[in-house]
Length: 237
Image (cartoon, rainbow, N blue to C red; front, side, top):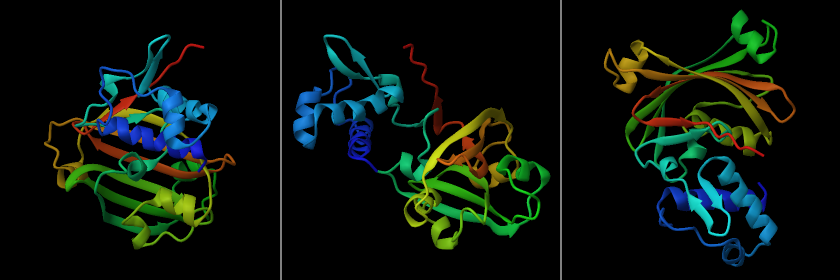
């Protein structure tokens, strides 16, 4: 990870934890550059990431401000540019994973198509409940080709799959394509997420790619409606 990405992660954490008042500009780039011992260009690149995420905005002649609506402390804010996984999103939270299902199987036609593999390529089939601070937040059903993402075991599943991909396998996650829809709770949602029969569930269908363009994940994440907000950022150039 580059220095500006490290700085961006630290600044994101500070903003989300309320270290800066949200009715005043954050420290200017010159002051932050001195604090982080980096160039003004590096600092600008770090802040550009948070501006693109919709967490900060710049007001010419006045400084850089926090977008108040983006820091609702009771919700996990997921932007359309985010590819960190839940552990990466909530680095300051206690996250536990409960394995509901973990096996290897041959993919269905739909799964094979989305992962650009043939029917004879085995895939991991993983269903996990993700608890944040002892509260159920999301159920993830994931398919990953075993020939691309190897070494997944219970230890990995109880921590972070994306961390395993990045730091153990040395692969670079490039991006994802998502479909977001509302749905009624199914049996798993009611059992593990504690959803009432009439609670809405936010489902995210995702195909994630490595930086080589190869799909490595086809997943369905079922989110509790009262724990997440998804933000789309459009910037006019």
